[in-house]
Image (cartoon, rainbow, N blue to C red; front, side, top):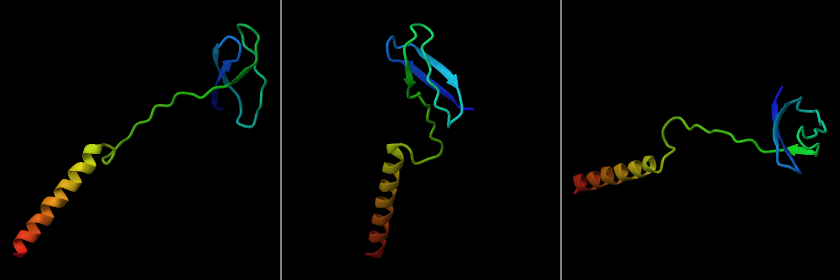
Length: 76
């Protein structure tokens, strides 16, 4: 079952609740009794491999330019 983050509309209290994807529970705040709504959770993103940094694309364009200059000078 997925875990969802709920935020109170009155006091701002945050709680985690487990329930099914298709369930629509009406959850009350444990501190003030107010209605709670689903909040957006923070997600960590990890990029693996090459091609994710600006320096990766810059290095490729510089090497292509140098190799094309060598080909042109060799042709002359």
